[in-house]
Length: 125
Image (cartoon, rainbow, N blue to C red):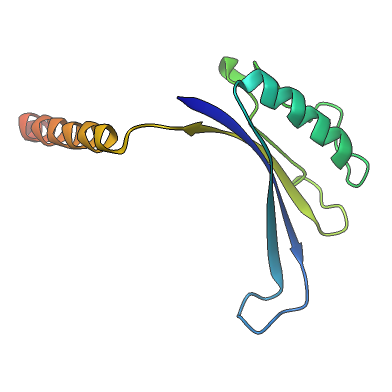
């Protein structure tokens, strides 16, 4: 089963707290988890409208279902230009809920296939 998670991460500077972080701060919030990419895109664009009240957001900075090579736009950011030294990253990521033992078995099978492939193609290296 898959779901889509919408998050916004902020990166900004604050007074250093002595932990060798140089004052860099990150705050990431989860907006929601959605059943479909379509629902996440709709909500993501609503979030971008809210962000545009505080930061510069270009008109074409939107989540889209079909973008480059037909893939969805899953990341919108203002890293091209800083607004008051604050960067934001609005992101839609796919969550995969799978059975752990089946996943481990699949990975082990892939590793075995890769080793066999490498052994059979060792002459070509």
